Length: 226
Image 1 (cartoon, rainbow, N blue to C red):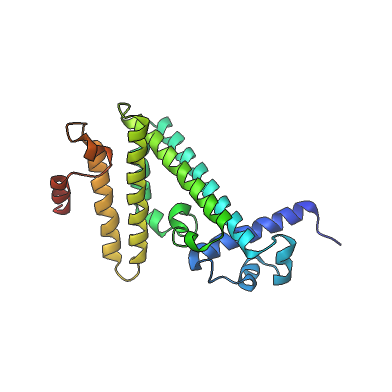
Image 2 (cartoon, rainbow, N blue to C red):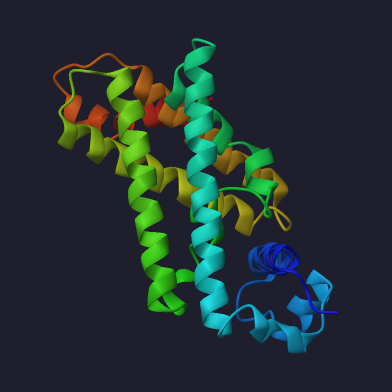
């Protein structure tokens, strides 16, 4: 008895889910097709019934993960507006939390695949770059909601700066979370504090620093003493 169309779709989704989980945990190169298909509950021979190659699978996994990340951010923004919270501040607090850092399987895919992308296929790189562009656009919208006096260019510049620091903070914190857990938490704490402090400052003559999303030098020194 053959596999129905619906069952084939379901089986394909199981392979994608297993692949994303393993790629996030171990890295793309470290996961072979045998391990992948076993994780999904199938034999290795069935892989090519669903995907032309491992590269094709990787590209689809990256696209699927980043699409889900975009939808989650859109949902979080909508929820923040419903409860009357500042979407950007709420997003930074969540993103730079130990819970988000430790959620390797379902955390931010931009951070999750950052180290892998330069070594992957061009389609996978394109999917990632498109997702990064969309994330920056979403953050720029939140920036403009917080300060409508900014131009679109200024909001984009701030969004890029903020997101770069957020992703970098998570990557560094994850890198030492097992060997130096206290330092891992410090990385999140101090970067979270500095970003939120910079965003809370009213615009002034030194607005170029504030628009970057970074604290002034004297503000950084004060925060490091906390």
